[in-house]
Length: 387
Image (cartoon, rainbow, N blue to C red):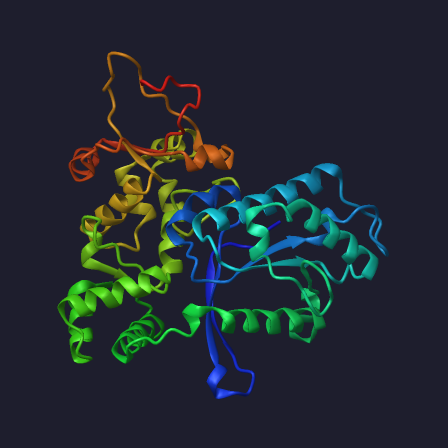
């Protein structure tokens, strides 16, 4: 059970020595299988990953002082999600360090249980490529960090985790990298705009004006944006039509925006759902069939006032295989397009959703604006390769 749902925060850590003062930006990524499709867009090896699980779900036997115990199904499901996260980190952020964190320390607190969980994790992953990047809890001699959230920062386990996180971050080469002062100044100014003006998105013309005041122009400004994009500190997609005119200051906002379309509608709701449900036929088509009509998209993405910005983010999702244009009534002589309900699919089915690599996305967007639709389609793994 990976605690998540997309948040970010800043956390200052200082061990007393100014030379090792550290400011962290913390993201809480969506752990449900529905959100796995976003990993390729937002994961970076220039980060430290805390993979969180519920100890009560994987400890063997009945937990002391409780009347409940995890079932075999609970255990397998929890371990499956751990597998998925570690594999995803190795795929999309290869080389990044990982700390495994076990919650429910107020219930699972005996040394014997912790050692049993540690041995389980070791035996499961020691032959996996990711294992060399999993950091050991040296203080407790375990392969994970048990914590008791009920005690917050007073919990010794959380204190140990904080110290281990800071120490691990300070060992990373990219933390020690020298960054041009104008680049840092621009980043800080953009973050300030987001905090003070609640402005997660800024136009490139404004960035050029701000950057110019710090001496950043032309190629220097572009290189600066590329640098922060690699670190996922902001988002700048210079090769995506429309997105090259935008800079996303708040990366979490971009995740949340796309999650308004790609989510489990039975579990997750957003403010815009009330207005979207008024379009009963289009809403049912989206929830039941995974087909999103452009008029409904404009309701769900009401944060974007400019239709060109909607098109830009739609381009981004299409080019990353998150959605694809669907043209009603168009059939290939050899086969029909097969549509699926993507909301209840397993992670691999969701991740495989893509569009034809030869699609002229801008042209298709123009075609689907009226009665046209956008659809997420899962590839049929048994489909003949020639098709």
